[in-house]
Picture 1 (cartoon, rainbow, N blue to C red):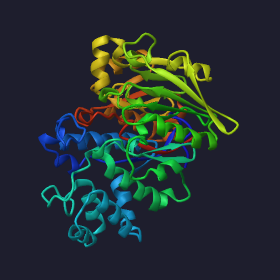
Picture 2: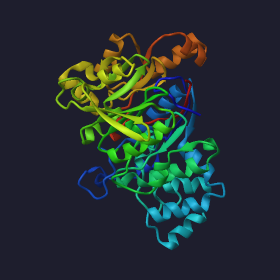
Picture 3: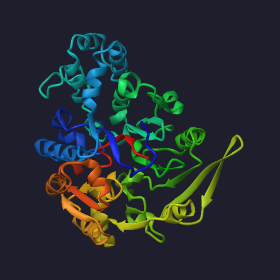
Length: 419
């Protein structure tokens, strides 16, 4: 398994459906000043969120094998690793010895749901042992493939620390990850905290030689320097770092910039265009002998990418309109995930961005229409679809999923793309 671009045909991906963890959220979980804040801006209507996610999985399944994280975790809990995973989660969640013993008596599927939902047995009505982890649906942040390397996330926020433990359980013990190289700095800071934090939404793989990382609210410079050393050792020749505003509205780089094809991207202008109200700096890290050099690049991100040999045309979030861009960036208008070059998936609620995609030459379609087209025109054959050269901007509803501040890229963890 390898990922050497953002847009190569997707072959394997991990997702996590909305479920009991979201159903257990209460009003105090959505207030940023609350000690129980779980990083959502509103309570989600879970049946609708499930339906939106199911449709997204159906579209992803046109080209890729789609793995559910909860299934992978259940399979790990059926192995000899079970006791170690229970101990890890129990310590992290500060469970009593009595409650830890109760975990040992659960069936594997119940235990997996207990870790996710936070109640004994994993039902919404069960006895609470720990807070739910609703952000687990955003699997992109849990880990990122960079070439042959797996970078396991180290969450910045306390609300997401158990997600890191769940991810490590799968990465270390599931056969899907047999033989996969894991970043050493990820392992060194396992269970750690600030300042060595990283989340996958800040890591974009432009090619087998160029990685792009956001220094953001969630991913720190100190962690980036360590990661850059490993990426440069692993075959990347340079790493570009985008210094993001430290704010929730642009918590990760992929909230303002994602790739649509080899030569096109979607971006949020006020942060990534020259002269924007929140214009960012771009730095380049390269290797010189045994040292890592840091150069401050003069120009915006697109200038930097062009200088590195990757000129891109942009589609502007919200069509570039100052009001619509601001509104649609908040609801993940810049957060598309590529199924293949020029075949991308976003949220239908971002109507101005969808219109801009159409103006840029994409066939902008609702997910139900795309599925009909896929069956009728391509006989449900992924190779025919990809080989056709047609550009599709596919849109799922996303009205409920977006309440957690994440789009389709945030909701997917690619394990394998064709080069």
